[in-house]
Image (cartoon, rainbow, N blue to C red; front, side):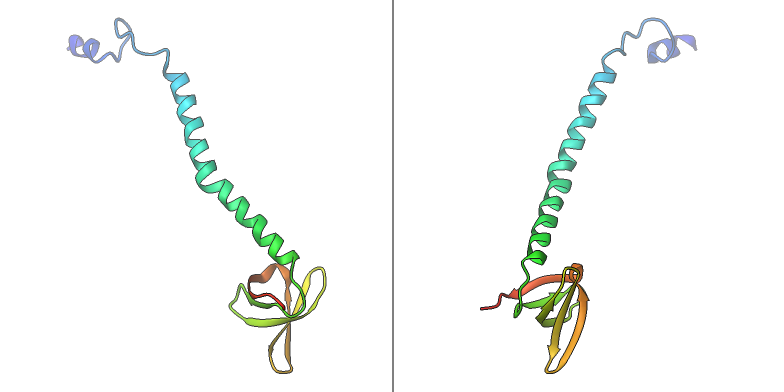
Length: 107
């Protein structure tokens, strides 16, 4: 029975496998991190920069859609609040960070 245990390499003597496993694990983890960075983290950071730039460049008369799906025309702006006209003589105030997209820039 002990011959099988030695043949499997699980106990002490003669296996010879070992040593280089730590380096290959570190390299593998670095490769996995690089894949995650270039496929997930970096594109998300670029998208966030584009959204921030779009929100900073809002002007009077832009047609926008909020994150909640409300369509409106920008009538007033402050640093944090955007006033939208969603129907004739109907205005709402929305936090600037909840503007999702600009559908039409003011002419």
